[in-house]
Length: 228
Image 1 (cartoon, rainbow, N blue to C red):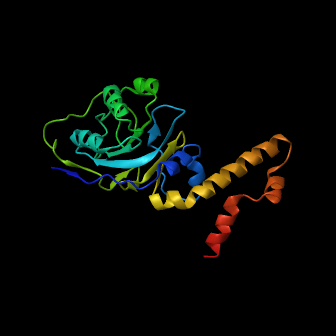
Image 2: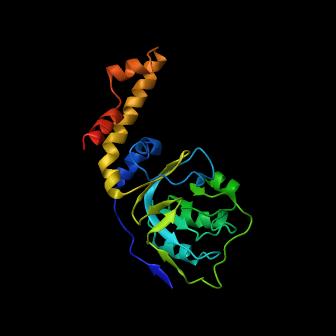
Image 3: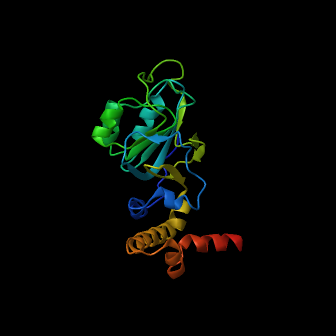
């Protein structure tokens, strides 16, 4: 059977919107929850921010994904563990059109996909492990096995329902709701500092001069960590 747990509303629309103008790599200075590098953007430039609706599938089978689509709300991100199946695509042009109709924000999986060119043309954000010319099947052995809104491991990271998926050209960062709220101000401050540094460098300053005149916010984090 497919286990289906309630969708988690863990973050406000305002927090998610705030992260859309920020970089995952900035938050990655202080978190250790980035997916491994084999989870790559299907097309670039790309940006994806939203709450995770997690999916555990059975090898070759995609039934749990269809169930997750019914559970997901606009702005959610499907995060799919493919149970080690690297031979079958779980998503392609038509399935992504269906996701877009339901206003799902994007998709992350540790398996391959198909129809990369179409995904890029549609502008639907997808992060996956390559592509393949063979699709998963909706029926057969294991077709009614899986889970929706259960903890899954994707890209070496545990993703819980309601976690924030924060991804761009560099990769995918998984952020708990508590971390998303706690660290937003730091990410905003650091990116403001980096923008200021770029302006000063263009004026002929050195990095050392910048750091002396206006210290990197990361330095404060390091000092606080040492003193804990």
